[in-house]
Image 1 (cartoon, rainbow, N blue to C red):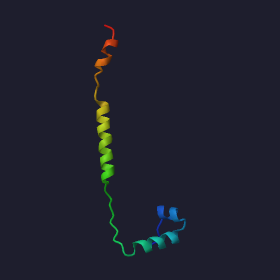
Image 2 (image 1 turned 180 degrees about the vertical axis):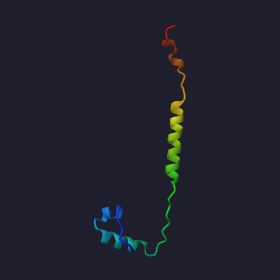
Image 3 (image 1 turned 90 degrees about the horizontal axis):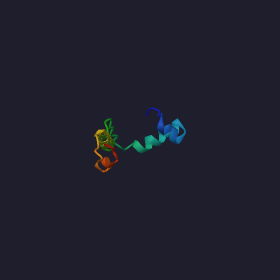
Image 4 (image 1 turned 120 degrees about the vertical axis):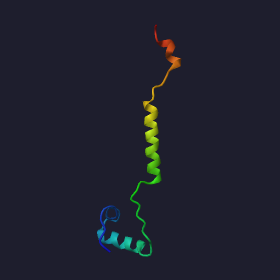
Length: 70
């Protein structure tokens, strides 16, 4: 197994230790790599888009019409 780097090394503080721990954990596992966007991120992006669409729509303020002098 090649030595690991990045986040595991930051967490465990040592490259050799991080590699050994991950090797033990993943020895009998099947690793599934997901490179796409997750459902939570997709839904959050859609929600932000809807919020922006609502913010762009003009609003009428009938209650404030009496404040406008004619």
